[in-house]
Length: 94
Image (cartoon, rainbow, N blue to C red; front, side, top):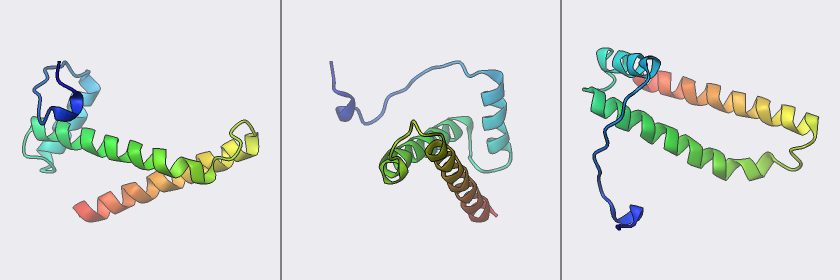
């Protein structure tokens, strides 16, 4: 069996829940992506990048997660970070 790192591309067939299909279809219809396949690839790539960034950033501000104040501060930081990323993306598209 091949290791996942040696696979350059792989076709996968899946069924999307209706809400995800409609969300991706809107992205195609608005011109953000040329077709459904590209919208799936693009959004999965964005999600993976965000996950990697979160994984790298979390040690900087997570000292003791069990403390309610620390958890609240971390949630606020994460909320601001998401808002900033959304704003950057909106400005890039607009």
